[in-house]
Image (cartoon, rainbow, N blue to C red; front, side, top):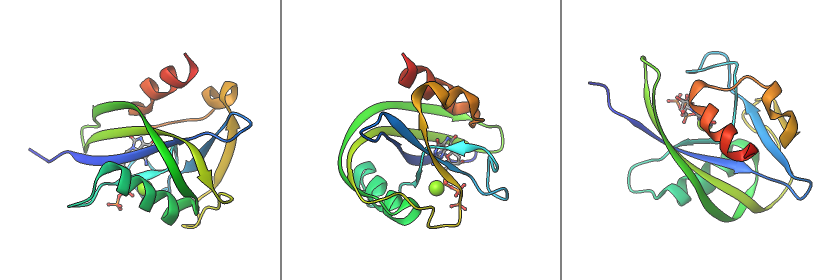
Amino acid sequence: MSKVVHVAVGVIQDPHNRILLAKRPQELHQGGKWEFPGGKVEKLESTAEALIRELKEEVDLDVLDTEPLMEIHHDYGDKKVFLDIHWVTNFKGDAKGLEGQEICWVAKEQLTQYEFPEANKAILEKILS
Ligand SMILES: Nc1nc2c([nH]c(=O)n2[C@H]2C[C@H](O)[C@@H](COP(=O)(O)OP(=O)(O)OP(=O)(O)O)O2)c(=O)[nH]1
Ligand SMILES: [Mg+2]
């Protein structure tokens, strides 16, 4: 039995109600698909700490405040994930793809035009409800 990867995920919303998406590098798990920025929670780290660290590392944003949105368990067959998803509506800075990844701010009603990993279906439903 492979163990579950605990991932902190941020649904980052700007004052124009746009959401930040990042493209997963092709060579990674679920590569080429769009994701909400985030990454693995490390040992001895809380989800909030992981989210703050990952969003700084990946998109250069300083998270000021987060709010729990939902939790998703998903089995991709080759990998099991536990996504701990938070709203991020209070942050500082201008988003940049610091790891060379493509990023974009997308109006909520345009989100359905992007290809996401399977686990994200439930997140999309929640955001759009
Ligand atoms: N960040 C993020 N990950 C997601 C989303 N949806 C989804 O299924 N995932 C999955 C894909 C990956 O298996 C995992 C994210 O882990 P990660 O980004 O830290 O790991 P990685 O693939 O970069 O792997 P590694 O090289 O760092 O070990 O969660 C999402 O919206 N955002
Ligand atoms: Mg990541």
